[in-house]
Amino acid sequence: MDLITAENLSKSYHTGAIITWALKTVSFSIPSGAFVSFVGPSGSGKTTLLNLVGCLDKPSSGRLLVAGMEVGSLDSTDAALFRGKHIGFIFQSFNLIPVLTVFENVEYPLVMVQNVPATERRQRVNELLEAVGMNEHSRKRPDQLSGGQKQRVAIARALVTRPELVLADEPTANLDHETAMTIIRLMKAIRDKLRTTFVFSTHDARIIDEVESVFRLDDGSLKNNGGGLRHG
Ligand SMILES: Nc1ncnc2c1ncn2[C@@H]1O[C@H](COP(=O)(O)OP(=O)(O)OP(=O)(O)O)[C@@H](O)[C@H]1O
Ligand SMILES: [Mg+2]
Image 1 (cartoon, rainbow, N blue to C red):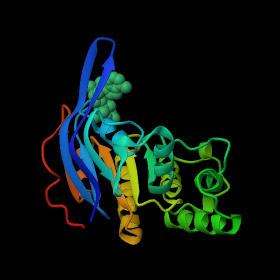
Image 2 (tube, rainbow, N blue to C red):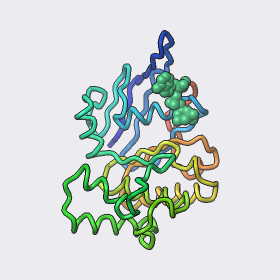
Image 3 (cartoon, rainbow, N blue to C red):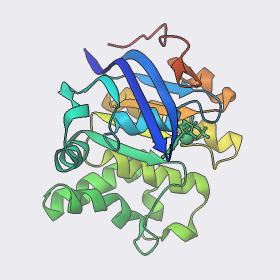
Image 4 (spheres, helix red, strand yellow):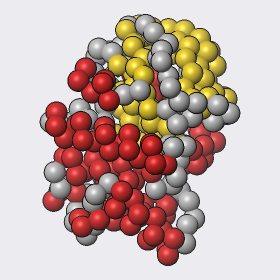
């Protein structure tokens, strides 16, 4: 089953009298459990696309279905609820909360978004810290961690609400090559285990070998249809 379907999706930004078409009638579908990347040069529309799928912004035209919901028509309150229920986010700059420990950072979405009792929170956080190899660092604060360690924590945080979909906009951009590969492989191993769908963006060509299928964006247009998707 497809988790994400876009049909003739377009997005324009208006800055004064200037209109930029960041996405131009893009169509694609991504099956549940996929591990895919959008690739393209700077300005090609990767962030714009992930922001639409993540219900952080609305399409100008076209259709976008995520987990069976027509997300383009959600108002901001419903979009926030939808995100909290279905989507986890991983960011290029990690976005951990500096005053919270590793444990508390991962626990945070469960406290804020979902009303999960403390015992279950502890169990879920510990499980995920174990899965990303960070259980020994649970009492540290983000400034005591390396970049790769921060991104491991961010992956655990993205998964703690058990979302169907994790979106990551250039999750390895601030990491050296070796760490970047480790992080991508970790995300893939988690996908294999939990069947969480991972959609991310990169302009690092070396990462592409690790990805099941690649959608190429160029100046707002899709250059292929992600051919060879092996999951569904
Ligand atoms: N808020 C905005 N207002 C106006 N134009 C925007 C806005 N956000 C993006 N754009 C424009 O839309 C186009 C696509 O931008 P986008 O950020 O999606 O590209 P990207 O592929 O993520 O680039 P990068 O690799 O540099 O992150 C660019 O031309 C950009 O200048
Ligand atoms: Mg971007």
